[in-house]
Image 1 (cartoon, chains in turn red, orange):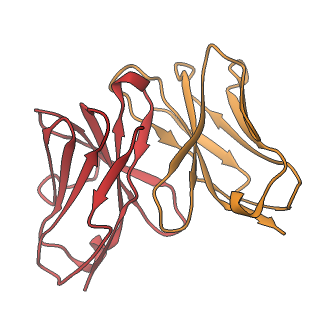
Image 2 (cartoon, rainbow over the protein chains, first blue to last red; image 1 turned 90 degrees about the vertical axis):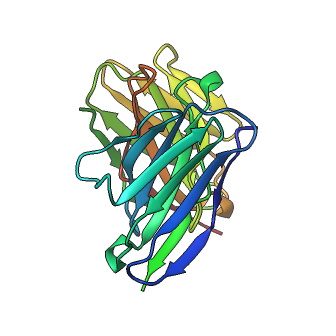
Length: 116
Length: 113
């Protein structure tokens, strides 16, 4: 149980294009999902908290218009990196909080983004 | 806000030895402390967690201890195996329903055969 999937697992795109990453909770409903960014050999940096049916809450320093988050259903949240640039290249990981597990977060496998 | 310190940053052990990773936290309101294992190129995997009403929790070769007075918690891995090699992250949260996890900076564990 508590499986979270992400798609795609990796993506290469040209500078200026937009990229959408999907995060799905496969066997539970998640009212809250989180999006993280991770640079090589560093810890996870929380970008935003995504709540089903409401606007995402972004962490300080994260551009809302740059990283669009939509949580349209209890099993799906999407992160769209708009007008991507090379500095957006990173490992993006989502997590979902299982309401049955209280504060427990289950992470997806991550999406490697490379912007050329 | 919460601040989590994790030590050591790297840890090398021989197969069969024990490994201990320690974390301290700053917010006395924190009451949930998970540990994650992250293998190269993968997402973090929850391996064990503990809540503030418990002092110790064990799952086979893995155990976590919590000292709320001192605000520190530790991960103990016994009889280490090469497949235990990974980066381990500790985290803490007040767990008020909408609170987020604050992560430590991670410990790279290398288990040599």
